[in-house]
Image 1 (cartoon, rainbow, N blue to C red):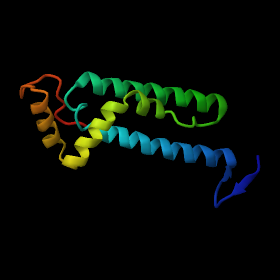
Image 2: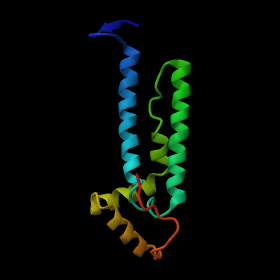
Image 3: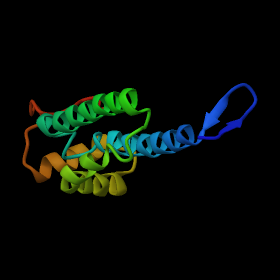
Length: 127
């Protein structure tokens, strides 16, 4: 593979591909993480935990692949987007309606789902 020089280091074509993939997956990671602030994830801890656990597993698997092959996986978070599509779509709708006010979105969803204010599955401070 030909190396292209920059100021202080050499970047290979594979490095460029890895950076592009990492950037795209970083964008997906950010999007998914933002959706965890909204219902149904802010209401149901088990749903949120499933997404977080899957993302952590995919991160570990990506690390192993990079170590073995030197290549960043093409779309590790696509599996999260596919598996949790309906809930992520619902979270996007709440975000669209309530903007950054996740607490109002959570309160509205609690009314829809008829959950008491002291419901134990709530996240008080989503990340």
